[in-house]
Image 1 (cartoon, helix red, strand yellow):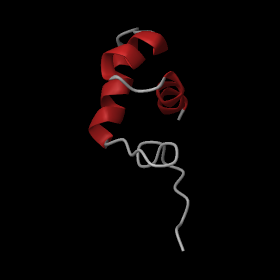
Image 2 (tube, helix red, strand yellow):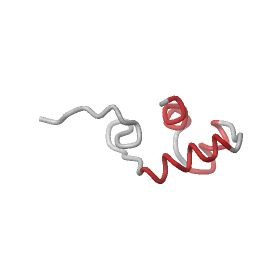
Image 3 (tube, rainbow, N blue to C red):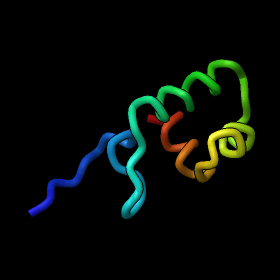
Length: 56
């Protein structure tokens, strides 16, 4: 039995996991006033994932 994780940095979507470093990079970009779209392009991750990380 698998326990559902609420930490967006540990589990994203169905199969892709984001490391703490990648989550930190998203937050760092956000703090530097980059848009969700810009962060998504820079890090090559979906906009929805970027948005989820920033929201959490």
